[in-house]
Length: 211
Image 1: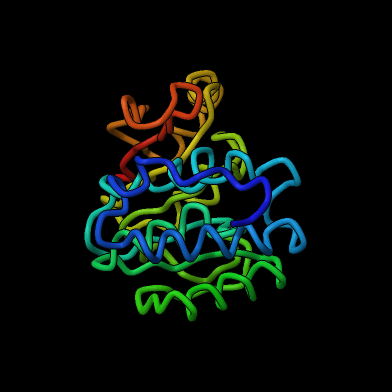
Image 2 (image 1 turned 90 degrees about the horizontal axis):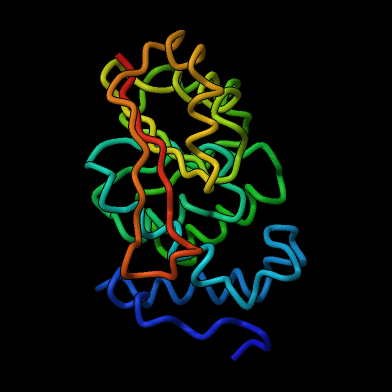
């Protein structure tokens, strides 16, 4: 056991199901190396499962078979967590920092995730074109700056699935012009995790289709 690490919540088994051992392995690796690699802050161990891993895992049912890009993957939240849970989905993890790219590649190999590739680039320089079915991102930037770098990665009819904080409704309002510019439709905010994680750790997702 790692000192200070949050005990595995019962919800982990419920969410990860048959993939729980991989979820545990990733969480333990992140607990051991996350701070030294600058992936998580020094105060995150007591809430690593709930605030970070399960927070990411809750998004898995929103994905559909196809090609998903995770922008600013960093520690692998949500990209690696979702790749563990959804082996039927092909993930491209987009991350500009070399140290984080090395971490993502090493974890994908150690976890035997054949559905993961890593691209070292900023999203707008990733040269993926508009080839993705869905795009995820977590804790990257406000919607008014995030939409312009994520929407162009999607094919027509593709979908943004962006994880946001409690202030997401305000971000949606501030992004109205950008939402119109990039022709987003079916815009909605989804709250996930009620009855599964504490109310303070509910996952909020901005979801929209690119026409």
